[in-house]
Amino acid sequence: MLREFCAENLRGIPEAIEAGAGRIELCDDLSVGGVTPSTQVMRDAVTMAHERGAKVMVMVRPRGGDFLYGEDELRLMESAIDAARGRGADGVVFGCVKEGRLDLEATKRLARASQGLDMTFHMAFDEVDEALQPKALRQLGEMGFSRVLTHGGPLSKPIDACLPHLEELAAAAREHIAIMPGGGVTWQNCARICERLGVEEVHGTRIVAW
Image 1 (cartoon, rainbow, N blue to C red):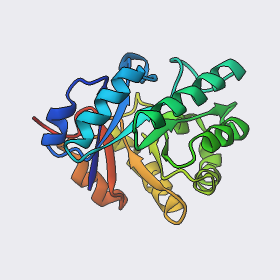
Image 2 (spheres, helix red, strand yellow):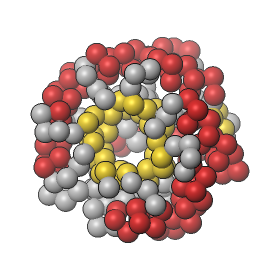
Image 3 (tube, helix red, strand yellow):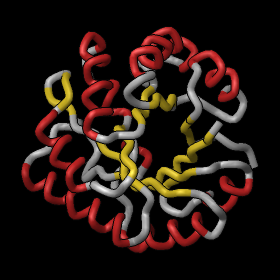
Image 4 (cartoon, rainbow, N blue to C red):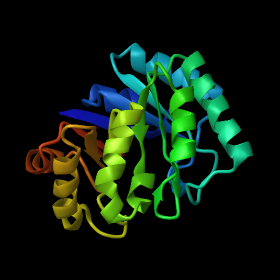
């Protein structure tokens, strides 16, 4: 089981890795769900994590709110991807959704900009209409994404209430892409959730204890 620790800037990174986190999702401002951190934070986090044998995925999100981005914002996101690559990050995390479905044009554009980097499609996935999610999983796998971070429903629902839908997603994703549950997944329940869903990666701010 790989535990991905969601870090707000550099806070808690050494402690999380020492406690068993194998990968860091690096963000700024978790009060809005995470946005792109500064380039200096990227550089320092990569050094800190790589020295301890962990990988770093950089959040690429120019603002809080929805996941429909205009041209200026997409350019900012492309610049953030280049910055993450230049600072030695292992991958990037982003998501684009338009009117309840994947924003295919924007997602493909950013995926092209991310060539050579690992890619996670973040919890914007939960804004995709449930009926369209199996197809979206296939499309994301075809674009080269390694995984989808999902709660399996609105964050207002506890993770246990979302497990039935997460099971459906895991089954639909199995030959295309990995499902990484998050949002209420902790060091206390992650093993149980992984076993039930048949997944190997989990995500959270409390995914390890120290």
